[in-house]
Image (cartoon, rainbow, N blue to C red; front, side):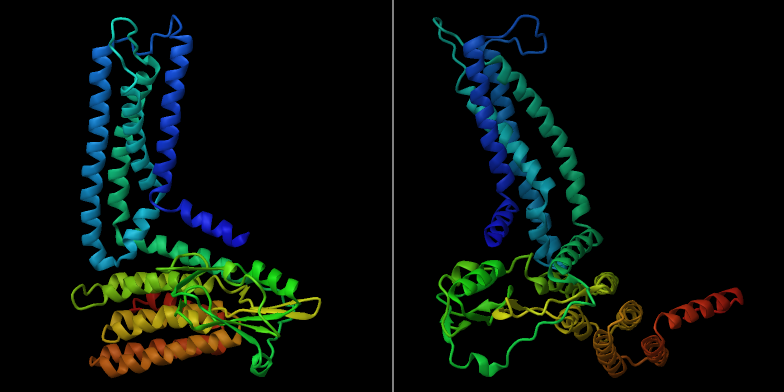
Length: 448
């Protein structure tokens, strides 16, 4: 059920979904308006209803239909060209954000619905001498749709102009990443025991499931897998997680003593990675923006620093969150073990690519160490703080090996030592540093 719901949610986010729904509603409304007028006519006293004849109705409806579809085609064609150019520096994910944006979908839906409504109404206009018919209600509503199309065009131009802004794109990707993080982690509960997976030998003689086809694992319904394992009275181990590329005939699951029926019913394979259960994909989208910004052809360290700040924001939000262990028991009987993303893998996806591409940029490396320091003050878990220190050591090593200026190297060492101080003393070190900074400013000194 969960997998079905997630799949329906993905479909509802497709670019064509909202325009298709609006078009169908427009056609139904057009038919309802024509039928109502054929049956009841136009009541007296409704002065706002269009009162023209057959020739005027045809001309008006033709003009609305032609202009609506023409403007939609022209505007969206130009927009796609502009987005394709901008994607060269922001990455292809910009196009994904454009197609998933509800405002863009509603704008396109308004134009197409207007075209469909007026075209369907136009076929009902007849000019025969015996029974001339003009759907006055529909012509009036077509005028309303035309005004709505003009309003949506103005909104769309302002909306798209803002959506190409790099900060806007980074914030959208940050929101996707934060939502994925909150869905992938659980509220920390000190009283809850951690489930322990059995040793590898437990699965040695189990029945193996091979992938019937290749593709990215987009969705995994853990509830359905757990239900199937319980019904078959078996233990099930998954070898893949959302975001992994599944190769044909590769091992994807092992069941002990046998496989339950319908394992593949809980797994959705596709041609591309999707936002949702695939946490690392949400992270990599932002990391790719930073990597492109640090390429020699773009050389935009400010954008990379913006991405680093958002990664620090995400890590600090995990202070009171814990990772699921991926092990499920029912009535003290092992039923399901699935691989999960951990803090080490998450931080690696965030910072490794930025460090590798930005190792020669002092501003980027300094900002990495500053964000690591702030993150270390936010996190209380010893293992997570150790991961932060590991990445800081990698940054320091690469920076000292690739930065020649002595002043920049000194700043790197100073930031690194400040990080070690924070790791040793926690947020007290942050407070003391802020106090020293204020004193230096009051004395007219320069804060580094």
